[in-house]
Length: 274
Image (cartoon, rainbow, N blue to C red; front, side, top):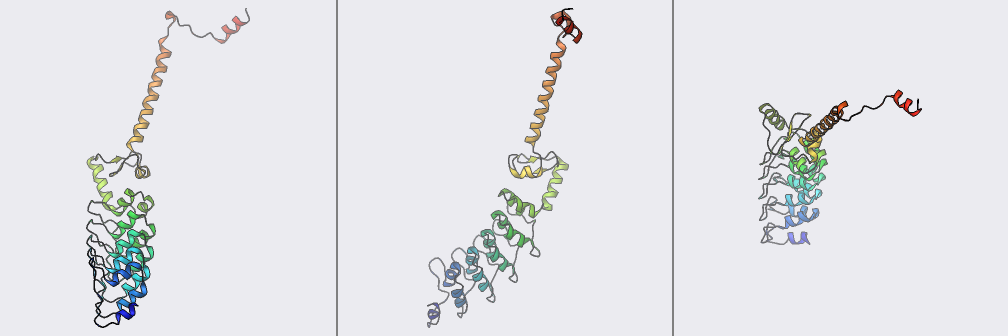
């Protein structure tokens, strides 16, 4: 049917509906690779056309994880693999956040891909994969040449920090400790700066920024103030009890009705009535 329509004289293959959707976008969204291939062969097709929200056919296919469709689109000469929607997100970001590992692999093989492209919030594909907890995708992105693991979003959070906030601790450990955070912590230690939202570490003499002592990320890296306070309380309690025991033992004297316990000989003599 699509092939017959494409052969019709005067057909506008780039015609869009009220939302800016073209036939290519619809086919890509639904993963109809054969239709996408046929549309790409039509003269004058605009492969980078965007809808009302800036989404291209490639973004829609990547967002749904249609790897074959993405591969077909990537094969079209001149396609902009780094095109962004109104939120500044690329096809790679959408696939990474959606957990589509095979689609991410296909996009990483595209020439000219900007793996460190950031959206309007400053987040990269690596950050979105970390937020989503997709360790396979994080691993693939880390293996890509030139990926910036220390990049920070608009709030100053790295991919590792975002993974920890999202409770993906294995991914956070895989991402390692960014140099930027290490430098900042060292400066805070030297200057004695402790922020209110900081969990101070007793053993490692460092801080976990923006974390709470009750949260697991603190328990991974340090002994928190809460634990240190508990230990201190127990020590004080033991000291208090020892003082009470010492006080009780030293209060008595022969003149105030206190009698020392009889020795073994006295007890024996009394019991045998000698």
